[in-house]
Image (tube, rainbow, N blue to C red; front, side, top):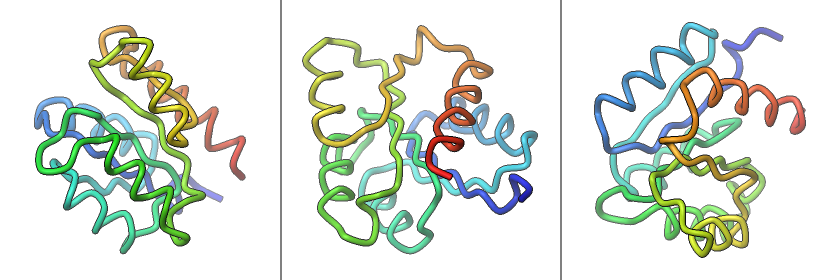
Length: 128
């Protein structure tokens, strides 16, 4: 199976970062779907059923915690792995994200794009 069949969803409101992640993941041959706010993210994730979600917590209209909670409460999206990718790094934020069902919590400042891509590959292997 090529990566083309693997859909990764990016919920990120920073246009620059979103473009960097999209470009890098498309180079790896993944299909990318994106949204820049929480309401669009939930709608698109339900419609698209991606294989993995990269979720920023500080997104407009509905924050990442609310998005995660809504996805995990929905039977059609509850099993999609979610990696939180955020600038929030407080222990309480990490704990909350993991408790809500994220499989990983990456603090943007601590991870290069290559490291994020590596984490995505690692988690996709675990779910296949």
